[in-house]
Image 1 (tube, one colour):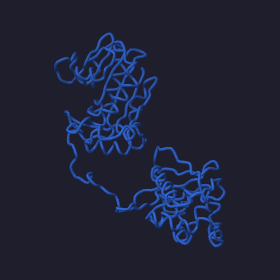
Image 2 (cartoon, helix red, strand yellow; image 1 turned 180 degrees about the vertical axis):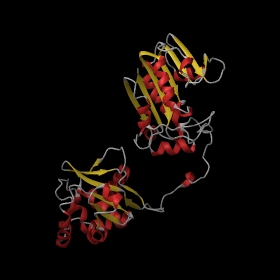
Image 3 (cartoon, rainbow, N blue to C red; image 1 turned 90 degrees about the vertical axis):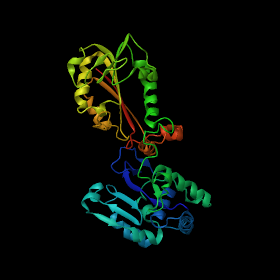
Image 4 (tube, rainbow, N blue to C red; image 1 turned 120 degrees about the vertical axis):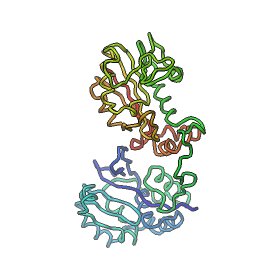
Length: 368
């Protein structure tokens, strides 16, 4: 199937620069640097096929902005400094009050029909911004396609509605019901290994692992320290302390240099109480090393209560003197995690790419 595209962008002026911002996102805005980007984004508001879009581009590539377009858009000149321009399928809209206009449905000005006539609306609206005039450098379809692919990679162009190729993902049951274990290594284990590489030198002294088993210590490859004890809610081989992490009295205060708690706090009915206890059990200057899954299927062993996201995780550890978050994931690895696609089926580039709105695993180092 030939790809079809639509724009997926909010444009905003800030400090005399033009940015593509990402709605309700923690992702850093992308700077718009070239006139070709604006022209191509505007064409795809209306023309969705690559070849057709390029034909329209050729028609206007060297054309001056038409007088009637200038006259019409001059009415909005005073709004542009504060406005957001929304580009979507068939729509080019000024939100005069920014996202407030989006929500309250006021001071919205639809310029889609004007744009369809000439594809020069964005050039005029942002004519006061200094952009590289690279239109003449696009000499053929291949040059045009490279820019289209770059805009798609940035997330400013996306597949047109009803053209997504779901392929093997269009399933109402997961590809692997066991987190990816039937296919290889679960994706979250990849991120745990990355976190361990960062923190291993910091783990020392009297060490307590909460919710672990002896084999976990071998997987973590941490320095065994002066001592290594395991706390678990159930008795078993290698378990030194049997008890509930919610109960403060099961561990002496100020008794551990390092406490490890990986993939446990989501199973705690009150993880903030567990963290308060951990802080009491640590010696002054001691550190807690924690990980929770942010995007993974339910695994009730015995119960599964929470998916603490980065902001919540930082808040839970707010009373520690220092903390450092490590967040891993992106849309690809979120899908892989939920579907049980193994880490071996993704490239390192796909796993290591980070998008702040799509965490798979959230980790922290918190110092008492």
